[in-house]
Image 1: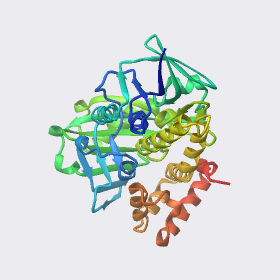
Image 2: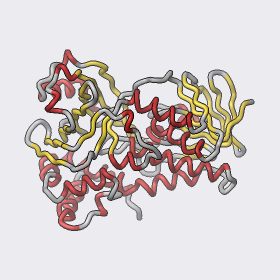
Image 3: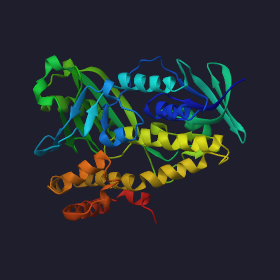
Image 4: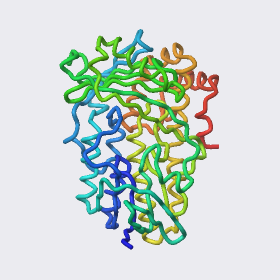
Length: 391
């Protein structure tokens, strides 16, 4: 039976960066994905400055736009604009990003096999065995990066405590829109969808338009998308590549590792509940999983169990704040939006998005009053984020 130090199932952002870090450290790594690359995935394609700081290399070659202007509106009504001196978010396409990341993992020494379907995962105290396209392959550890509906989580009995949001997106070619209106600008319509928002993101030859919210909004997402297009004078017949996807958001207590198996990225339910973005969490969990796997391979630990605890502690306060603001905007949209648009709040949003602050609660100065008000609204809305806070 063929053997590796670590098998990584799924070559998205979390899986490929995990494989890259392990291979760079000298581990023998097998990176698998059932799709043939290049392949696209439904995703807004935004990479925050915070996410970029978690990457061990640059991604400039696949960046299609960079945002320094941010337009936030309450639904499709009033709003405000903020600017940054340096890009706060860069935009890419998943087909390009994922192929690039998998290529970097392979260049670092990982063996990358696309079109390889994993049909079974078994584990004991001594290792893990994966059945890949009918062949059994062994490893000391296995990392599940196979997304929201992944086999690894089901096989290992992990990440049961996950709530799913939903999103629907599509692309409109630049020739059908006013390119100058959207270039270098992110547009967010907060509370335009219950439990979420709608967006317009610029890309190289098109704009990406999308809507996302609570899981129960699934049957109405196309109506929400049509309304977004109408608000920007876009014709729905120009929409291309319209796709829906689930947004896995973990609840407190979600178990992310057991024995020699661990989950990263969407497979672990690490999508941010407020933004619906999971790139930062993908890269962060990939780093922490690779560190845990290297500890296991070196004999410093016997399992990957410490990884799950580290993810929980690292993301607890950010997850708490995101859940709180999500329900505040959902239950009290006008009051919450009024607080968000106050001048002292934007520097906090920028600092968290850039990675200079780990969570809004770490802010000091004039922003503390509006942030305290938002926490009060969240509490009155039943704030699920409180369960993430350390005791």
